[in-house]
Length: 519
Image (cartoon, rainbow, N blue to C red; front, side):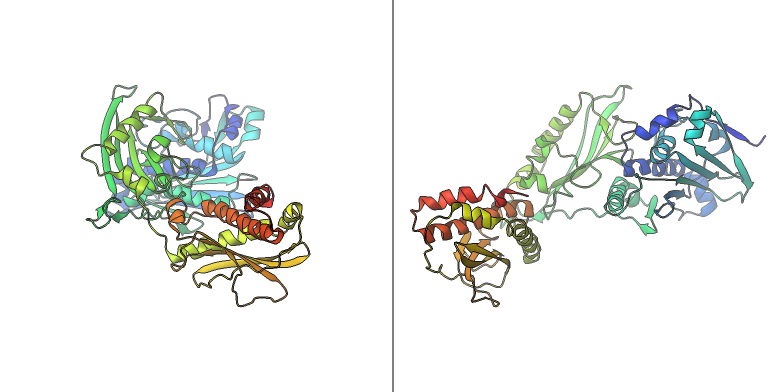
């Protein structure tokens, strides 16, 4: 057979310059290369195991070289064979077998061109003796309307097999810091099923990615707390309607309740062909339809999660979403019926009504975060809010002292009210001895300064109101704490002026129009 010397990259090469404008995110673009590696492995699994042994596993390494503005993706799959080489580098030419993850004939080209104008592919196919390398300079290709690229070759061992994609001269699309962390979280989530099945080992900068499934709640039904424990996981499987090819639309998987509430980990992952398409990771990507997950911030919203494998559905060419057509409503309706059927445990009711007191460790962590943030936000400007509403002589009567507790976190800041120096102590408590939701008075602290009059404002995290509506969610606790601070200061202002009790409410409303209402 005559060795290949060039590769034709039609259709019109100008399409390559358009690919950088695709609506990709870095992790979905990188997933295209991983998809190709998995597809190659699955199509050649028997041959690979014949050479490498039964323990062979696909490995994909992604390296981010920020100093040299380079990303390298390397796999040990079967490589790109000579009979498939021309098609592999032509945009939008469908592969002969597109029933797995290589589906649209776009992935490698579109993802590489999205990242950069300069990239190269080096591959050695299983049972062939030649390594082939192709380099892309998109600006030059488009400007000169180049339709064939030179293939550089060299002889290598017949039993070797790999593909290496190198993305060069990457500027703003290089994931760094938080962006790199997000890439890791999403990719580990997207390929969790291949991890579990022992098919794929995925590494980023030498770190092997893993996926940890949330622990499932195992406790009695909320209405019978002394009853038998139930593992709150419901398997689901159903068909509904036909796809556009005459096959059936199918769903299988599970819905469950997390042991510990987490907005980041709640929601549903929707799979297709073993790969997550929607709901891969983080609270901004989770699939949480209100019909199933409930309203934003509800207990159901923060506890319910699941994995659902969909068959017969089409996806976008960037594989970041399903093309639902008119099937979304039917899908959710039937799924909810399955969860509320006689054969199902009452998982939705349990997700709505189950309550648990959070651990002292969680309370300590969130207490520090909320108190620090509230204090930082208001201490510089709240004195101006106070001055605007004070007008009468000071009543020097000290507030009643509060009982000192150990299970709490507090922070203090000075505040001048009518030329009197106060030290305001803001505290969150999770001490079982405290029965009231909000307490106001002298705060007993070891480092008390006699040069100040002390104002203490304490909010109990384990009061029934907080357990019911807040838990350990700092986004809920912080606004309640700010209300408590406004109430405490309103009392002080009312007492020092001798004003009627209604003045407390007036002061409260005015304080909440100031720094306490700002993020």
